[in-house]
Image 1: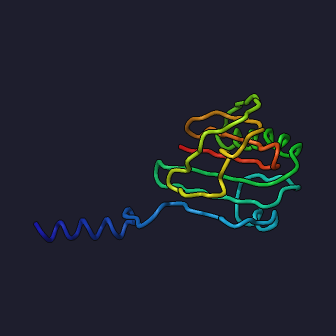
Image 2: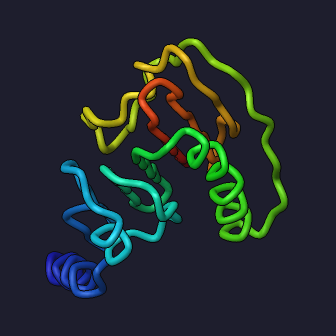
Length: 155
């Protein structure tokens, strides 16, 4: 019996079903340029953005992706449509999201990535929100005072 248990354990290990970490983990906790970001991340970014931060975690059914970049507020507002189209294409759907003014945002945890000090839409006091909370639905915040765009999607 012990020999069979050892064979099963060995088979599981060799098949790769035992994992020592997440399937996907990427973090950029220092600001990147657009050129750097284009080589490493799949998120669509406007040509005018700078100070880009990005993190993604995926493991079986757990998923969170967060992005922050700086750009002119008008570019951030236009970019909501770009991100919505990209997200819709990813999930083969046709969602649209209205935009609303916001004066405050609750702290947005990043689950398996925490802590993510740079993902701070809770500092917004004058902004815009678009998106929807839920599994694989985009949430976007724009800080109109600081010219910051935030994106978050979770499972």
